[in-house]
Image 1 (cartoon, rainbow over the protein chains, first blue to last red):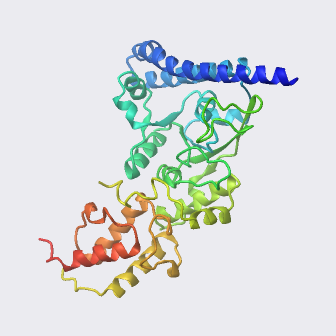
Image 2 (cartoon, each protein chain N blue to C red):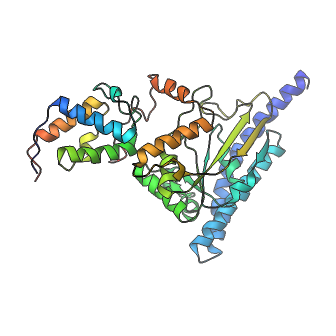
Image 3 (cartoon, rainbow over the protein chains, first blue to last red):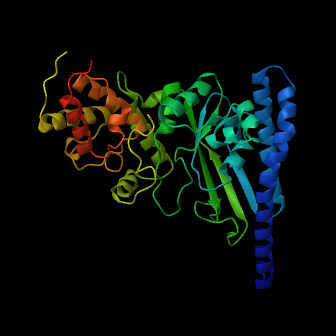
Length: 281
Length: 90
């Protein structure tokens, strides 16, 4: 591409990215007022409605991804997609970009997600999240129990164990919530690796700072692993959760020494400053 | 049940033993200055297990508020000390 060609392409991708953000926002509003109520009313059975609404989410997100591809801002590839269609698993993924959830949900016909609990007070989105039986991001035991419960009913659940997007250039850190969920429900974990090249829409990167070229997302679905493999008999889940989390970090290529190095730094996050039992009160 | 008041050293020893058993920490990590979250990687779910164990030590029901401002091992010792100094709960 010539220099002029490149800068035209750059301007186009900034415009297209902005357009997609507007599309996501307006789309959420429109489908909350049209598709979701219609799907909810299409049956008396709330569980059938939940499945139809989750399917509706898949199609909507698939449409978004195809729009982004068609606009020339992204390409993508998926390996092992058939394993994402099996139910009753805890699907765990790393979280490099803002659109990981859009891409992953577009590949899964039925999956429960953890969503900001503020949405339960949003006049438009409140009903869709209830009908889809999504789980509010409450804290501690309450969240773990809610998630384990949906898995015990045979649903699949998507979780990002880091709890937030990865910060590029820093060692990956994970909360142990995902491990606790898998152990409590005694299900298989399905590890999914998401990569984005060049990096974009990562934490702290504004949407208009588009990458040097169209970004490529790659999803690789791993082999399922039973949570029980990490549990020794007669042991509290706290220890097994630590082992499982270490295994996951290693799976995503974050070595143990990276993790310890990071911990020994004195930088503080919002959670680090929280009193230890804030979740209890 | 009568629980006799323990010294800070005794409480620390108990905490050390408990934290090693519960969370696979190394005994030498458990010092009064150690921060629970940053240094020992104890999260809010672990805190529930820990408080249950402390109930065994003190023989009292522990209100979560007691641990609201607890951030270090030393803070836990302070909280246990003040709990045990109170007259036995009715």
